[in-house]
Structures are given as structure tokens and as C-alpha cells.
Length: 242
Image 1: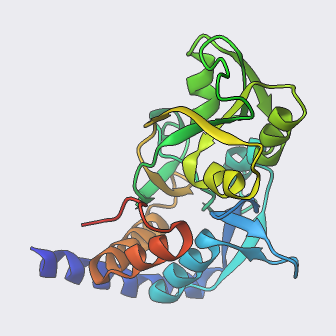
Image 2: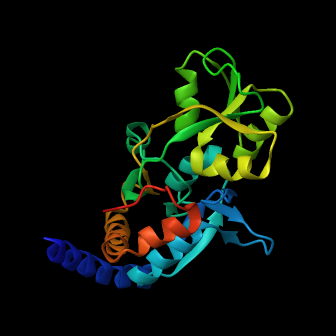
């Protein structure tokens, strides 16, 4: 069965050569959510998703360029044609899937965590910061706590540091790197599993492009290179693919 799946992936990857001849694929990302994606000191998009995206494009024979866009308008600017994909740590949800299409996931569902400056922070009745239009902000809105939304993930952490919020709620992969460097911040409460993994977003009309990226992701899962990238960027303990 694995050989059949891989053969189908190779056929779809071959179709990507035709896509490359038609147009340059613009890869949309936020550039502000390390280690998923960020802008480095040279002003270039960097991070796990940059490395992954470049490899997917190479396997598919696609010519790709990178575009950054603020998170709060990242879906509208995809649907309006400002770029062709979203590869920005975006969790696959039913609500988003009603507006755009997703590839299969390239990061398994990972837990979200709370980070605060006080071990006794009130997570259920206090003020919790989260980035707007994320699965974390939706979770907090339904939790009974007071939600403070911010345009960027960095602003949510700053809200805790300056006392505007009791805690921040975000992807554990993002917040753990911050707590490792800041002794005043700590993980509090229990991890929360929400969302259905992270995938690439595409316009619903781009079925051929979606199939091409799906095949490239499958090939990376099959040969172990996706697991190797996950370990390189997120470390031991990151969920891996069988």
C-alpha cells in the first residue's frame, strides 16, 4: 500500500512541472511566529515553514517566491489573489475550511499552553491574551475568561509582561522558546489540545495546486525528511508521523 501511495505522489509531483510553467507560486506567511516563520536579520523569511516550503516547491518542480502578510488579513488576501498559499502555522479548522481549502497537515496537532508571570494566575476567570483570529482566541472566548486579542503573537506576550493580561494562551512550540529565555515567565495550568494539525491554505479553485503540494508533503512523510525537519526545528517531544 505504501508503494501505491508513493507512486501516486510521484505522478502528482510530475504534474507540478506544468504548474511551474504557468505561473510563479507566491507563498504567503506571517513572518512573525518563530520557529514556524519569522523574518531574519537579512530581511528574509526564515524558519521551519520557509525550509519546508522551499523543499515542497523543489520536489514539485514549482517556482516559488515568499510574501509576508499580517495575520489578521491573511485569509482575505489569499482569497483576493495577493498570493497563492498560506503556510503560516495555520491550524486546520471547519470554520476556515468553509472559506479556503487545506492540504493534509504537515505538523500534527500540538498542544497549546498558558504562560504567566504568576504560578497562581487565574486562567478560568482572569484576563487572557491571545492572537486574534486563532484557534486559541476562540477557545478563550468560550472558556469564561476575559479575552484580550492582539494583532501579533509578540504583543500577547508583552501584555503579560506589562500587566495587561494574567496569562497568554498560544501554541506551546511558540511559547516554550520564550519561557526558556525569560525566567520571569512560566508555563501554568495544563496543556490543551485543540485544532486538527497545521496545513497549507489555498483557494478552493486551486485544486491542482493543492494536489501537487499534498503529493510533496506525502513524499516527505514517506521518506522521513518531514520528521527530521520537525525534530530540527522543534526538538525532542514534538509529535512525529508514523
